[in-house]
Length: 583
Image: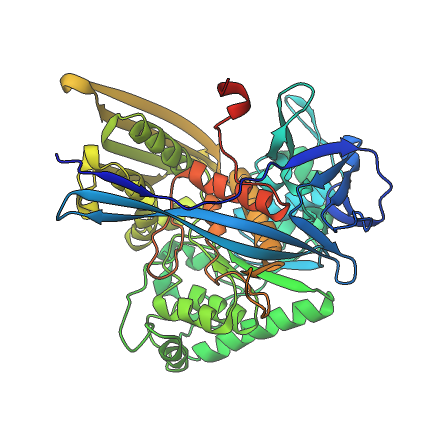
């Protein structure tokens, strides 16, 4: 293999050392960010408006950002941050075997609205395992409900939520030299999950206390204490088109917009969509909400066919709904209704809700969307382990993944058409990781594939405790091989519920961040509607046109952490550690 010549084209740029110091301050502005946590931005600035101060009383300390990159506007209650984005582009000239690497820079200005709004969450599949578990977690934390199981007293918490239970690296402690970390939700104001107003739709009419009991996810003592609160929540009528989910879900379908007795009509799809729009408007008005986010956590649907003239453009998609086209699924109607109401929509299931016409509708209306499929257990581990193996120069040859589960998700996936949606979402998670290594998998991305088998079986006895077993068969040097076998038992809904929280909280947060190029005198802009920053929580990340999804979990996590850092004037994290390594 000819490596050719590597030529670097560099440009001069400034390197700014940023410092973070801790001191006791007198602060004025307070915003709720999490249970019993607050953040305050001082209106007292240095003369050049370069210093931002905020307090973290849960840590009994205050933080001063002396990065010289931020300004606080008391008039608008916004934080303004300058950021120099640096990246590299590569020109791979296969004709002469040369690789030209160029450095590119772009100065941006970011504006973060520091006011935390009143937010409502509308779940499609509210009465399912995930919906009832999510509501239970919020109510248990909000009302500080402790309970007992065989291990003793359990206090309410949000373990499993990155925004509530993980940290961000801020820098190096001056005195100890140790890395200094801060809670993720204490970097900038975020919605307190206890303050979320929750409702939703479900094809089953059980109230949420009954749904919680049916799900068999939570310990009895917690269910007992939550029942008086949960029974006050009843799902709104949903949309049920039998051909899109498994036939074994028919018995649940007693709470549907499109039913007449035991009959379900697929006629009047536009009216069904308009009813969802009406539900969103009513919920927002009655609860005096600033923002609403709609999230699909209902059954997996079959994959929709991409049909020219039907769902390829937003105009065709809207007309296809009016024409009651057979490829218009319930999830499509919920997404369209949300977008037309200006409400972000997140798809937590594997089906391809975001057909080209729906993405174009979101772009046309400038509304945030994200998907697909919650990344909770087996796939999350796979995106980490495969990245580790490839980065270590060990060549994965095959991955066999087996699951069995006994909840309603597993029951629905026992149907072949619904399983196919799940198989597609789970199988693509390693593709870009393999494509990153041409030494082991060649230069053609389309050929960078391995034997990758996925099996899912429904076993009612195990309930919500999903069992995942994987075998990684890898090639070593000189013809050697090794096998890595994993056995992972997941509490499926207890992993999914905090992910739903994170998706909602970060989606709302991103809606308060706008940007423009430094030399642009015009208005600040929103993010592109396809919100790829949420990929960390999603199995098959939706990517905008002409871009490929990033599946490596650590890359996705780094993007989120660096995003939070840049907004407070800090550079992207790296592990150069020159203060240690250079003489």
